[in-house]
Length: 358
Image (cartoon, rainbow, N blue to C red):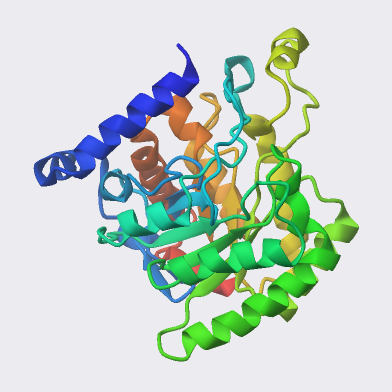
């Protein structure tokens, strides 16, 4: 079945369920649960568990109501750009079942910040919700205009978000990686730092995270982390999808017909593990790391063990998307139940205390 059609129908069903209180309660009864040992406090927020929904699933802010009922500890809406952008023409999603992966070529499609802002103003978040922001993918928007484009979205969503994620990387558009150039990132972060000071003057401070690509070489990664910390970025989402295709068993004929795009799922896991190690070393573990990618895709792997592996490496929270596509909404509950069992086996009574003691 066409994965784009499936995604559209899932969003449509999610919108319907989100509007119904009895439906949300029923979904929560089936999939949700309280896991006291898994509670985490980070970024000035309280998370019922460390498992979150990554950006990309709910791009337009239509599903916060029902996502909270599925047992997630947090979610991200987006990526959202300041101006509407259509993204790339279909096909934009390709499943790789033999690799438990997914290639997306969406092209940062977005309704635009104004429409999503109006929608989210009517929503009461029931779990910590980050707003994932990105520069409008129009290649004509560059230089100072690109900075203004990004800051416009920051201003709109700062009052609504529990935290903000800056998507500095996206391998399915040419311009999406512009702020992964240190020479471009520095002036953007300087302007952002000033804007944050003004926004925080009359309201509680909110955390900003930088989402980085797993395709960065060590030199550029080190410089981006250094610049981010110098300008007050509070943590990192590691990482985005990858443009690499090494080791895939899916036939090249199929992928060549589809074209470029960002690869997620099981093949991404090894790159995320390597990147967590590097960023944890670069930061000395001083700031939170959100691991994003590769969880719950392989039916032969224990998904709770995969999450625990990320947490032991240095992550504080873990996000997933592709695993949900392959294994369905019950995956969240399986992971959290499995994490409780792992903590018991490890003699750990409180995940939050374990994370603080690393």
